[in-house]
Length: 246
Image (cartoon, rainbow, N blue to C red):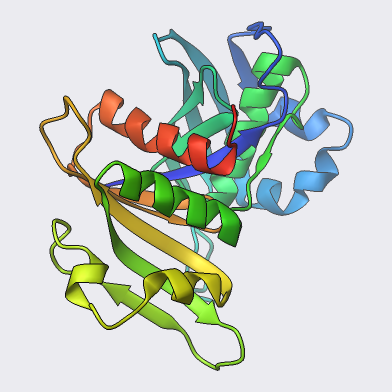
């Protein structure tokens, strides 16, 4: 499985210029307006971002961070963790992706990517996926013979949640629960927390199964160790759903 968080690059239409190949968390702290990231910078206590180079479909970055992990409030001492993470700025797309990384740590990482690409930390922002975005994503997947395999929503006027998962990603929820109208369920939801899908794209030998949440986090469940082109298939589906017409 591979975890991811997607972010919005608001300057994606501008030509990229790699202004520097390395930038530190301390440089971010010193940047005017960085107090907007005070919560995240309270989690990340040090580190740096390094530009690794250009690939056909993305620019790659290595992010080294020392941070406070989420721990029990009963813990007497705060411990720190040092780790390396991978981030991608996807070409011809408004998406920047952080992999296998805590949410607050990722927010600092993409601010550093923004500094490398645009000279300021504010061009890459958190994303919010709406119910309409989710509906488009489901239609796109369905049009490609994919299946809805996970749903987590809160319905209007009804307390509680609806959360269903099919145990076999090759069998969709509509087959598993034929008496449920999932289209109406999605339409009537006051909050769509997450949806999950599976599909077998043309010219790809392995089934792709993934989930995405309303704040942009998600997982690629299958293949368990996805190749770059398989990750990019998921990212392209998300781009097409969230930014139709691009």
